[in-house]
Image 1 (cartoon, one colour):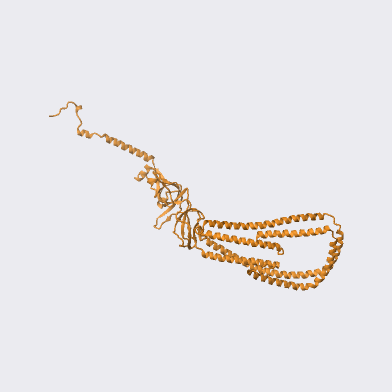
Image 2: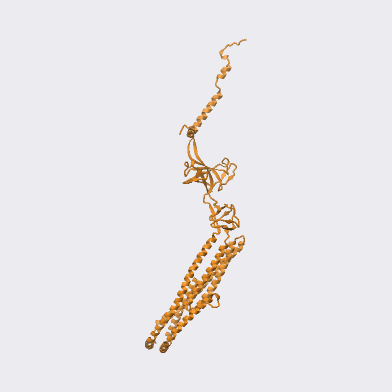
Length: 552
């Protein structure tokens, strides 16, 4: 039975007609695709893309690391540090054995002490010859030699004096006879003098004595300050005072030296062998003994200055009294003139005798003075030679002390200890051997040392930004750290495999890296990182066109 079609609108689409129609899904997909392409073109035209040069980097401190090397070979005596220890500038690191230097230093110091003592004796010998006084004691074993030398000289000096004296005896008899007459006239003059004149003479005598006392007291104060006897030989009282002071001063100095030696020995042994309280106590004892020396010297000087003040007051009173006498009238002046004329006549008669005596004594003094000067010159020559020898010994001691100081290594800077070579007590080390390094701490910035290959070196410049991804802190979790290039080496460094690179430095802050969970990643010296140096930026579309060779 065939179908009947009554109206064309009632006719339905066949399968072929249905398949020939375009699906709306395809139209939508094409529309979306074109939209994406248009958006991509717009994004690639306006979007920027960074060009980077990649290189490896390592974290370094912003300040220079101090590497400690030995200046000479030796055996380790004490190790004061350990890995990671915080050290301050000037603290001890290592000490090396130096017993041989101590022995040599002790021997040289002993020689210096002997030479110094000898020079003191020679100076005293010289003073004894100059003053014709034996300042040595025959009861002290180390002074007997000089005592005998001076006694021998004094005997020779005395014999020569006696020889001259024999030729003067006859002349002296005549001089004494005339002198007796002068004394008789002088007695008459003195008897005619009134009481005011006697007082004046007495005041003048006291004034002269006070002048001498003041001068000698000042010399005593100077001797105390200079620690050297400047007093005249005839002032035995003050010489005895100075010798008493000097003995006490030497005693206090020796005590202070002993206290210092005890303190230095304990200090060198350290807290491990000697308690800190004992070291502190020994230090206080040494400082107290040292201050006692200064106090003793100041007291001695103040005592001398007090005596000078008292003498000056007495001198002022005497001078005031003399002024009163000089301004008054003296009735015995004319009488004294008569006696003075008599004395003058006697003096003229004796003039020839005195001239002859003067000539003889001048010859005597010249000969005796030459005898003294010859011996003094001889002593001075020995002193100069010994001074040169002493200077050489002192220079030798300084060199030994310098070598001994090199046996104690101290920290030149403050920082953290990094052991380069494990070193223990008793180990032998060679000269120039690197033992540890000290890494500065508490820095606000780090320095990144970047090894840039030759192929990338031409793209970078000072001031370029750098992105650092640290191996210890994955970039996906902790992100990266930004930095800036500060310097580029002028020449490349060639490795053993023939590869070369340029050393580039950049700075980064010491801020920790933080991941999504709030965990902090603290940067440490020696960490490695991947450095991406941003060298340029271009449009994304230009980058794509260059890749497909549509643009140069």
